[in-house]
Length: 69
Image (cartoon, rainbow, N blue to C red; front, side, top):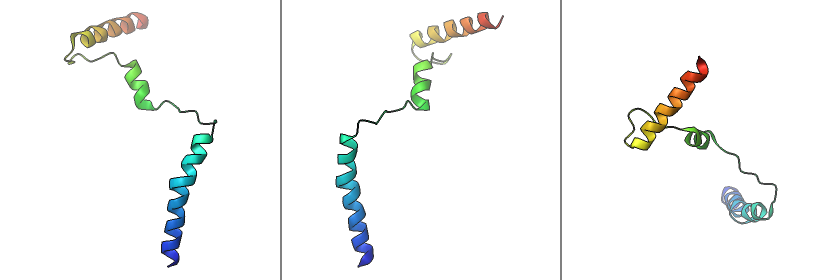
């Protein structure tokens, strides 16, 4: 009986009170994860299907080679 009551209490807290608290909170600043950072900086690959991505990869590779010289 205690287990069922505690499960019910935890469920009510996380289903009702936490969403209300998060909705009213102004301190939430979403961060950018590693995957989003990778997608934003991706230039394509030599085996890409799209010609735009292949050209983008080649120009990024050329600019990287020029900066290393």
